Image (tube, rainbow, N blue to C red; front, top):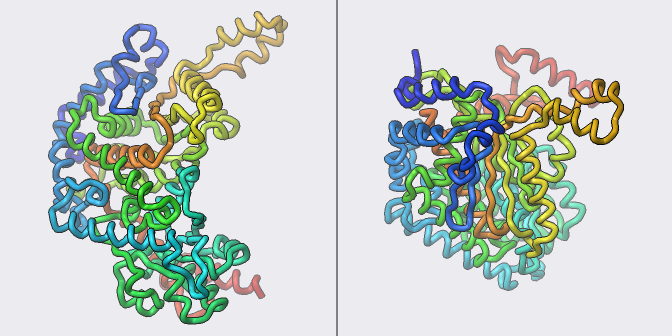
Length: 540
């Protein structure tokens, strides 16, 4: 039985259109349309989205927007902003937008958010001014964020991307991995008397976060005494009893809500490590940047709507062109953490195979998202992207100016960015390789031997996002842009982008296992008991 979305006339027209394109070359699409770039780029404020090197014609985007309208995308967007329970499997609203936009959500939610923001800003100011100090009276110079998933990736990205905007003498550190190596490195390098620890865990029961939190508490208390826990720990959670047991002071607790998923939570108190590092003014600019995109997404016609276009093209590449991966390639080292952040955002949101109606999809959904900062990537995996057998979709991102304010070094980055996107689209034919070798005086036998190795197939589709500079505001723009593009793809695929049941099974199984007795592997554990016995025997 076909899934509902793939049974619509608009979907079938897109399937036929993709079949007609076949292996049509992007370079031929440029050759046949001298106005291609003018018709296939969109400007919105300070942003440019260039999709002229996608494997599309001028007819493709209108057909995609027709599909979006047939699926009632506008109504779905409005329902999200109103706070309707569009997370249908869990019966929850989806209101991360309310954390940064005063037009999102019902009045009660907006009031709660304003109260939380005031509390966060007051605490941040007190720490940065030295009014909130550690147990020995020293001001805090380090903040350690203990969380995992969105409670780690979000604030880590913001701090890393905005390093040039740090102020106040506070250095952030991040601990997520349960193997303890990150925390162990910090214990040997930080003074506990100058260290504030944030534990980010909505339930205060996440296994990895709890293990690292207990170890951090042992470190602080071991050095400064039991009473120091109240001075050196804050928490972002909803579990008051667990925070009581841990020793988190009531004045140092910041709330989370069930209408914010972890991967959408950086705008909330989960971003406290970033706010402490940047200051509330800069963090507010980050929120304001996201709000600009919220308003754009809600109010702009699909034909000029950046998140809608980006999301529809993502669905086009994955579902209709069957491209299995998306490589995210920022030409700004400040955004080196962006691919990892987007991995969770896209793959945890849309890595689903069952529709909202409970049907199994009959089309590909979320791509594998990966990537790295462009300059380094050119000297590692670009070889495979250019000449390997898989074909990936590509997102290039680049600021017009470097974060330090200069343009000359960024010129080189942009030259490489533009050249690579051109090479991916146009390729390099055997005839071109042979002609270049002849012009260089290479002997005929060597041309015949080597020229085939220089061929680039091309026809690798890419989008290019250009923006003025990596700042708090533009980073907010960027993350909100991708959030909404993920939502658009979820609507196209007819899936719930806001639950994550796939995360839970492994956690439940791990909770039943123990290397020290007390938990049995259970029936059907397929050799897990034998593996535990092997590990224990080898450890001696």
